[in-house]
Image (tube, one colour):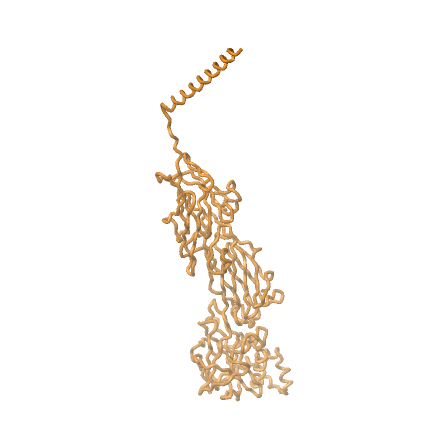
Length: 561
């Protein structure tokens, strides 16, 4: 009799296989509890419902044939593999106590070990006992179980009956006992292979869920003004910017015997990272996630951060992961301005891409990786144009410093060829002096965040008056609008001193705020003719009056003598 596996049926049930009184539950069955209700059909069918890999196909291994009725009773059990393979299979079963089981159950004959009914009864009993993964209903097989180890042995020693069985596509074969495993050729890099699906085919219609859930990754950056984590933020040059990466391990994590985990994070070239700031946590939904940083190797080379554990299931580095765990990496990176314009101002922002590289097939060394997830950091700059107030002539040689809302001045710890900007100066004396060029312009006062800045003129151009006090200060309040697509708008309000916003050069595309500042020229007034005589005449009159007063005083003194 032949059974037909229908990989498209939506009717969900599980199958029990009865072989000389032993009940075996397929580890791939979808049901509530151990034994589901039947949904009988004229021909035996099964649907594998895809859960983790939309392109999955399956290698199908047939170990036994049997007649399976509508009540899932198996009779006329026969081997579906050759004698050499039977011998090897029995030797493998003996490693799991098959010979002892035979004796205990009164099977002492010379040929009892190769009796297919005995072998099937032992195998199904062991598989049923392997279903100990409590995070799923029905339970899935664990990596250290008989069901997992035996499936791995079968895949390495038995030729598949069929390759390329596809979810959603009917498949026909003899009634019997089967193993379904994800085909290597169909395992895309960002997905995970199913845990073994042991399945008795025949007698009724069934749907089986693929025993896997994909790994995921989320990259976020913290906005300093609100403390909110998200995909977008803006920051000042020199600021320590918090990042975090959250990954979920595959849903069949416990089906692996070893598990490679690496967070691979590419930082923008304009950012530097201190590996001492990197922390790794496992979040199992507890109030306090567990710090497991010491279990991971942390490296930062060529702007790439890697956080790696070669085997999270190794007893010496156990990170207590399970299918519901989240692995979280947190760190701070410094926004720097390096030679060559590595920082992007405005536009599409400074992208930070992260991916998760992980074991993706139970029982093998195969690795996959998630698609990259991104977070963007925005930073802005200011251009200043200096004009004569009366003539609008561009003025070279004016000098400015800039102060942020924390009272810190922008300084350059590097040099003109390799600048190292930061808001590190405590006074105007140690702040960087920006100087207008021959066109009266200061290009790229770098490293602005959304917020308030004060531009202070500390030296006027030659022949112009250097303002003092509040007259020397121009206040610039930078406002950005970030939405799901990135930087939407960038603008500013300019007040105080003799400054105003240059709306023509203010642009989110270039990340630039334009400011115009005017100066009054110090005009020296000429003095000629009468002005000089008047001064001289006054002096003569004053001297004459003084001499007359002295002579009069002496005459009075002589008269009274």
